[in-house]
Length: 176
Image (tube, rainbow, N blue to C red):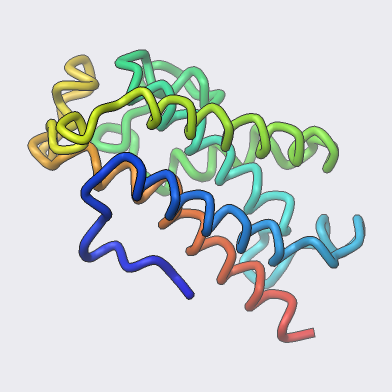
């Protein structure tokens, strides 16, 4: 079951539980794939490994974001690579380019580490912090939607993102 992003959980504990539930489901989506299946590109040009490197990068960025640190360098991007200036598609392409030649074992290790880092960062927040706006966490990266609660970005970069890419991975391998 995919988490419903239309009403994110209102407490840190519920966010962590949703994240762990989707993390387990994401891991299950590729656990039976061999190295060759993990690294062959699908019709969109990305392999399962590429999908997971992408998820890891955004989880790292989220951890930095909620800690009020620069979000983009931990993702392997330039400091000024904000979506509102560079564009989300360009950022995703930069993540892909940076990771496409990385060995699978390194990507899997980074995915695990990034997930744990995101969990730690979110667990340091209070329930009230979840409702604070994005701009409170990243004043150097003001955005037109900077007034939205950080909860939405947490959802979109943890359990919601895991669910999205789990579905992509499952769809890729259910067609073979």
